[in-house]
Length: 312
Image (cartoon, rainbow, N blue to C red):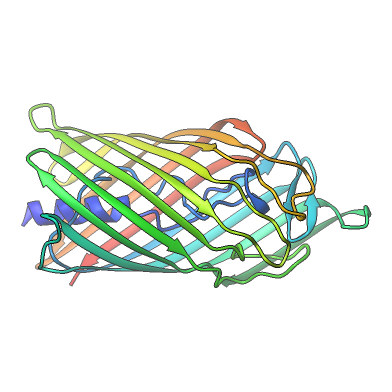
């Protein structure tokens, strides 16, 4: 049973489930793609079956430059604490497509945000305030196709973000972004069995669409995530991991009053994944933590993600 469990872990860790890593290169300082979502086993597709994953993530950061949120401006020194939890359902059918396994999934998140900020309103009035609240996040659907060729596995995916989350114009505890998004990408995993090392990478491009409530067009994003794991004992893989983000095109629209942001960030940290059986049911547990650096025009902070997956 070990091989199927390992494959399950690979796909779940490849899913960008949570939007726990904000970026100031888009409206509200948040990206519709969750940086840090791909790590160990990023390119591996699981065997046919139904999988349920529970994920929680926490981001804490501050800004060194202003950003736009719901038509108002958050000034230098503003702080954010963002917690999000999500359930992901994944179905992998028996029938292959183009020689690979198809994966279909949907993710439903809820979150809590706490903003402590100096705020400048549309009329230029500045005040200091704090807002916090819970709400539904933006629901994500995903389709991917993956192949296994010896020790090398890779997959291609496309995912869509629906503006279903809690959102209101003004200084509000927004959980959703109120803008659709589409992300396409490719991920790989290569396992060197002699050394027990695993090399992983995932690259993607996010196309953001207009927030009609504020007429803000966030630019197109590029993201790359990586992880190098070492199997220290049966079922347990540990190692360094990181991500890199660059905005490819400028923000625009009448709501982009702060100009054409083009942000960037790098992050490094580490994590682990553990696969086992509870009776005959596969269980995968994972944890990762990232510290951001080399930040331009965005939030800067730390990002922690936990997840657990069962196969039915």
